[in-house]
Image (tube, rainbow, N blue to C red; front, side):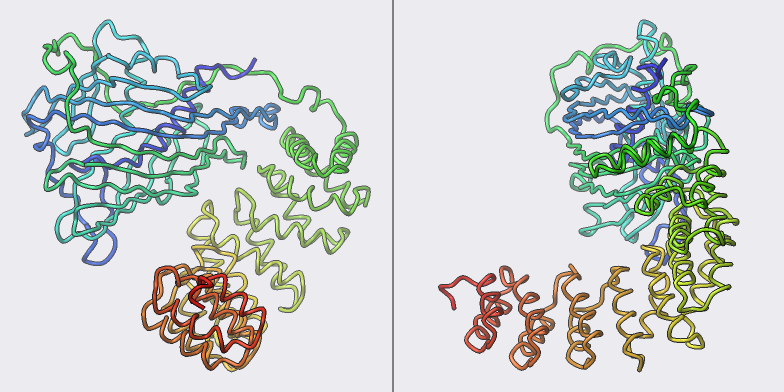
Length: 636
């Protein structure tokens, strides 16, 4: 028996609809708790914005459009033997269009205000079945009570409304957040908010003198689960922007995109959702009795807002891979290697092994024994370590820890174990200790030590790592960036910092200090690390560094960094690049300058003119043709 359609649709709704439109900024007072962080330009207190007074005598109509793609694996939530089974279902909403209507019923905003709302229309995309009760939202008015800060307090439905309508309305309202327009002196602020997935930190940035605000969902702090399991949500992409309607406290439009991944504690992916959305205020009111008919408030059945939006999962016993639990490790390994013989079936082999590893805590140890005995083909071992990493859970984690320093394993396998530990779903103290032991045991130029340091860099940016363990890793990285460390250790530490992603930006001062070091290897490593961390500097600074540098390896890293930086150039940078191109003897550097100027030739007349002037002087036929790619032949 599979998870019921009811449960699956509730999950899709909460992870597809609520994730996406939870980013909407609709106006009004705070619906969240501001965080006391940042400089004076950051809002640091919890005073409400204009509150709900702006709602008085207002009639608001909003149209929204949304496109979502959700990949849901309900099997990931199941315990025991069923947890390893794969039953991923891809549910797609290609188009979603709807219209909200709001009507103020009670204008007493000293404590609460009652708003009548109706979800007038909704169209689902092709091949998308609506969740149970969702259809009932059409033409079913509800009463929403908000407190003085415009936070949703309770919701009530008519006595004849379908049973699911309140739950579905709560889901719909998790799409809408009432966020105050920024005060004149507030350029940015952060807030802890909650949607159908859980609570998360959001960052806001005021734009255009307060006429617009940009919002980014930063990270989830907790996730609500349909069966009280511990889940983790990772924000892969998030950006939305709201434009205020003149001086009012309402929006004219909102656009945004979201991408989110929800996984279990064991590291199994439960949901992956990508969404784009747009919300627009409608200038005219539709013809609807909703605006005039009386509402008998005393007849409405009420419930507090915020109770779980999830449906409880039902009992569930079937396996997606029948008979897998009765198959021996030797037979599973045979099937695994058989699938890996064909390039098109590698994913099948990986999925098979992940499912088997999750079925029993003994299976990872049995696979390790097969690795130790040498019975697995060398070309298949990398995929096997990937399966151990992706399987998640304590048993697989302990096996990787053991494998990282197992004397009977081949050196390549120990390195694969270290690399897997650097990206394991649930790093704990045992993982950190295992990597530290390998690092301390070897020399800085030893391959195993290098792999251990790179794994520490990857873990430094791991979202699931505790602050204490992250601090422990960061201290090791910082110690090896210190001037007292050997050049080999400092280069390796910079490589590890580059592995940390956004978390590595904190090391920018230490890395930047090495840009002028006497050792060209350190200078090159510093430029490479800052490029990987996407640390931007004025282009003229990079061009000046390029003009002074005389080591080919460092020059190559500066050229790459200059071309990778997507920030707009200043007129000073364009002028400097033009003058350098006229006098540069190295063909490789001229190529970089031509590509740099050519990238901006369409929008900057000075960049185009510099290429036109250089064209007859260029001695390399290859670079002459390159100039022709950026400037029309009639101008040359």
